[in-house]
Length: 99
Image 1 (cartoon, rainbow, N blue to C red):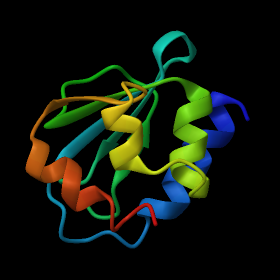
Image 2: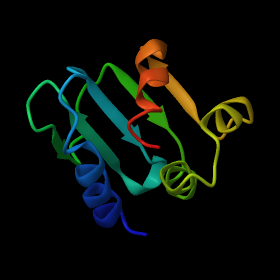
Image 3: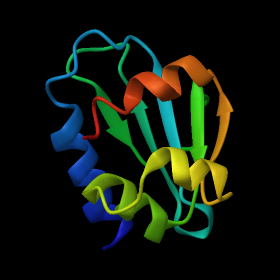
Image 4: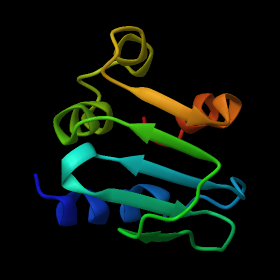
């Protein structure tokens, strides 16, 4: 899937989020970034490399696995397929959004 399609998917998944009030970034290494600004309603999603409260660093392939449920976030983290920079508590909270 392309960065554009993944961005559209994130827009759909975050459309109903109203209580997060944080900024999240997915750094898909060489493919680009997906930035979610949930301090506004509905959340703003872009491909701009902006500051975030938590940043997930992973390949586009692993990102797609997380989104479709074929890759467990905890296992991905322990295996080094997913790196988390910033607010770890927020990272854990996001699991509910992307299920």
